[in-house]
Length: 358
Image 1 (cartoon, rainbow, N blue to C red):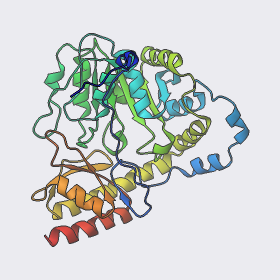
Image 2 (cartoon, rainbow, N blue to C red):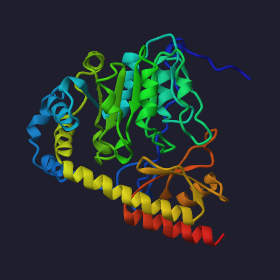
Image 3 (cartoon, one colour):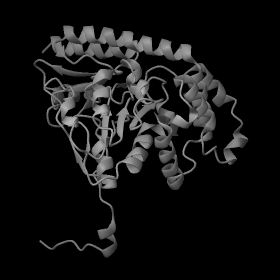
Image 4 (tube, helix red, strand yellow):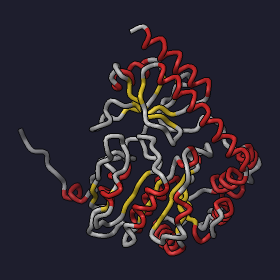
């Protein structure tokens, strides 16, 4: 067979295997439980500010410092504004952190089962990495992070396993790695326990990353942020201004401010979702599912007799979308987002009928 001719310019293309996001079906009658979006609307102030937004402001560039939102985040989390960095979703913040902090010849460390974007950024930026294995219960083995490294990133709660590690475990890892930057990715922390934010003044190598996408119901606005000591935040901003000064658009900035101001709505929404999660756990157990205790807005489930891939396919055929990962160690698990009560009722109505009629 004749070899395909490779043009000289093709040899210079950066080739990576991209991250594969969850499906985004366009049909209106689907039950969408595959991308960990919040089923509830954002705070009422978000809709109000968008409706009343001065569209003439859109002809102007947004504030490159994102000052209004940075100040509100700092106020909410009781840190100084110089300790806050904002980006276009936590993915943008994390990618910027990779570019800023992971420049050693030593490998960075993250678990073998975790957010699948982590190795993609490593390939993109040519960062060496190692993936210490989670134990049989999908928990961190903290001693695996005591060795020399070029940085560490840990999702807590972890995705896709949903498991939350205690603040003492996180601190132990940070304390053993004061010579490298440790990033704790807390996309789901509001549904779990204590944040590592309480440690940032104690450890100058710690960066905590969170998002408006989950607990604040604003995945479509793409707002993420990091908190850490001023030196880390300045370094992030220096790289950002060298990459793209105007990252967050005007609408997202104003909407983000309104979202974080409404503390009562924020707390009520979290509590409501956790209650639905508890009900879902009970129903799943009755149907023969096993899963770890969740600290997220999703459950990581496996059935005692029905293969996960088969269940995923059957659910999809019936317009119910969940996430399936055909990966080592987790190929018999499904990640099920906690939806509204109505969505979950429809999910369990189908599962009851399907499982009990097998």
